[in-house]
Length: 220
Image 1 (tube, rainbow, N blue to C red):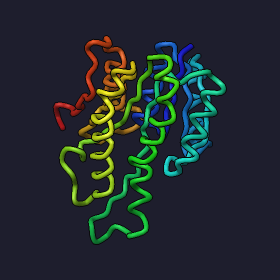
Image 2: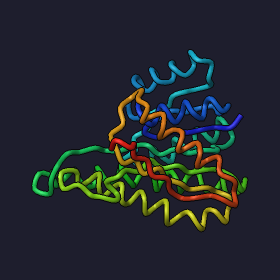
Image 3: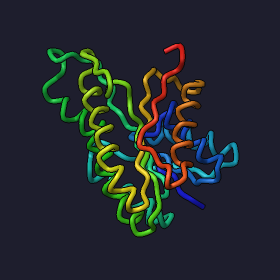
Image 4: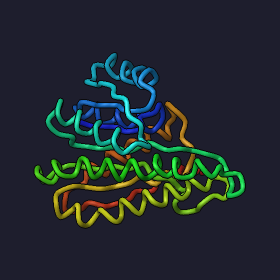
């Protein structure tokens, strides 16, 4: 059974994407800062007959992210799909941004993704297969002065995906991002649509891999 690891698994896009992969026979590992909240999501999956478990992770802490990946690999043998969904959504202009918070925001929004990619890449490369999926955002394309730290973070995440795409494709690893240009609520059709975009990216034939899909509802 293939393994899907979600880092920063929340009730919206994170859960919907994990559920989409679970429907395809993946065993799902949901990891987030709050074990209690994440356990509720796991129970929703297991009640529907899917294989799912919970892990605790602090996406801002490189050691925590690396240890999570190592633990999941030790238990399941490999991670076939990594989904990085963690984000620090702080509303703050330049003058409002607390000076001691900006690096913390970046650690979640981009640093954790970089460490996670570093951690899963060696085994994926050895297998010549695997996918690293990143939840992007429209702020990467149109930065908001009211949400500077997440705008910079999503721009960095998009750069990470594009920067890794070619060298990782040569190693059999598909790096891709869905740039989500709308607000997404838990249980919404938007959440399901984003999940479908991730599944479609994962399902692409190797000779047709693409690095990015944009999602914006017609009404957005």
